Image (cartoon, rainbow, N blue to C red; front, side):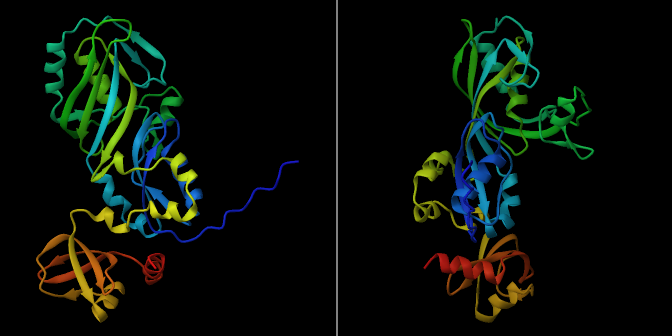
Length: 316
């Protein structure tokens, strides 16, 4: 007989865990594992990372889930390896080989092609993606053998650096560092670069090294988290306000803080701003977000008094 499963006692946890996602796990699988280790009641992630990709995956818990949407717009940085001369059905190593061609390009041609992909470009989203069409993910159509019309998307490649290259031998490749805008498909970029070089290509490795202000050097692995005691695990959490980079700080005292939390507008000598992070003082605790127009602070996403109390108690 199997031993009965131990029921995990969940608890309120508030903050952001910067996870170095391992190879082979989906973003949701990684989230569920971290959520179980933290015994957190509520969690979410800030956009998916393919199972074949590793690297920076910010996970939001408790009050942080209210602001996870803000991070979807953040720029990303990836390191990737493109295998040249072989095209697959999914543009990555999981797909079936659908075309092979000799690699006859020179280093000069590689540099010239990479320059062409710098700046604003248009991409057709791959069929093997989570993008939805008529309420159904594209990869679901792909699994059924169907191809549907996809609208090209405008993205920006801020930097495209050639880290390593091999154009001879049995497995020619390019290793690239890509700093790009939200919504960029690195698999599509690798495939398009291969096509521009005349030989085709597909991704064999992908690692996200940064998303917004968060770098891989700040991350913890699931194995590392598992090896920690409970108190040390909680210490890995970044405060909720780390998601509010670029927001103007506004501090409210006493009754003004309470009224703002109840959804009331406040007047003060603040500069107009579309994005304000609002704190109560004392103590210096996040209340929520808002914007300022003509000296009036207008509430946006707010923490609940219970969430604020729980955060304060966790800091004791």
